[in-house]
Length: 459
Image (tube, rainbow, N blue to C red):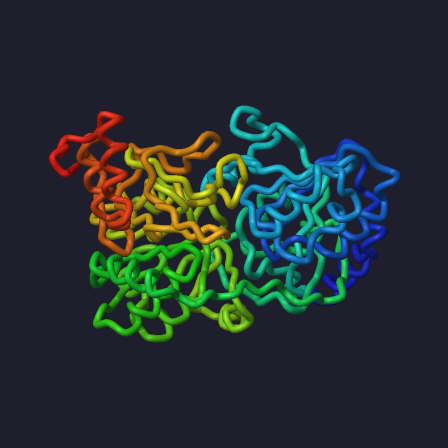
């Protein structure tokens, strides 16, 4: 049987240049997300620029190397780049190129866009894909290619596309499932052998004193047996290290993004998933971004499970997990409790991702808590210090989490629980966790906006 797989492999093997010939003008092409974005195929497709027009390319969290289809088509005359969640690379690309756009999505429902693309035009984008290309591990003896650290919606993308294309990279770790973490050679149309470029590694920023204070405030709300979701950044990683040094025990892990903090939690024995009803002794995730040590830790590790995003994020499923603690970060909160986690005015910074999924699910979880964290201030490039808790959002700012949905807001000065509170109570609670230097000014704004009751605080 293994020999049959090898013959199938040889029959489907093509160079990147040969594979790129499947693309025609007007096609929509999916690139897998994160480190799943193809490199060899993209470079070969860019070489065909003069032959093509109106080709749409979609991915999420574009990581280096910068795609050649963008670099060789700076005006966006041929290739339109659509990113479901902006990264630092995407922000740079949009500033320098004319064909780069944000594609809004709620991550936990994104499988629906591809699963129903042919039979449910209401739920799907109603746009058939010519091809989906993903970087995978080499084929195993059973004929499977593993998606490694970018399960996400990859299987749904591949099965809904006309051509399923894998670009092999030996640096991708083999990730145990879960589900839909691999594809069989019988379902693959084209195989490309790449030059095994190194995977993108996400730097782990050193936590600031403010990060540590915020993490301490969150830590007060975590109990034995909780199921913890952590977002990206220095603060969540600090929290993971802090938990590893406490007496907390029997934690579970349910997250979209597997970050370095989970290594600390699992290796310390604090997160063992002992009481998880669905994934006992395993941390659930749908993608990973971190350093080489994280990728090496993931490789053939039975203590973590790679799932499609529908399973990892869908709020209807994860809200059934008791004591789900969701910890995410944002950019701004206004006095009404609206949360901006993705834009600087009109400039797209990141995206919604799975934040809405976990904010909703954690609140509906029995014993659950959703905690959205931010430093109280931000220092601009010119040295000006501004409050991140603002009276109202400036024109163009995107609301990621509406005020009705926000549960608990955390800064280095404390925690504001907003649910079921009226406007003036919300304003007071948020001002109490703002930086002291800005509180009087915020009170004046709140009074002018008629969301303030304790006006005696104003001198």
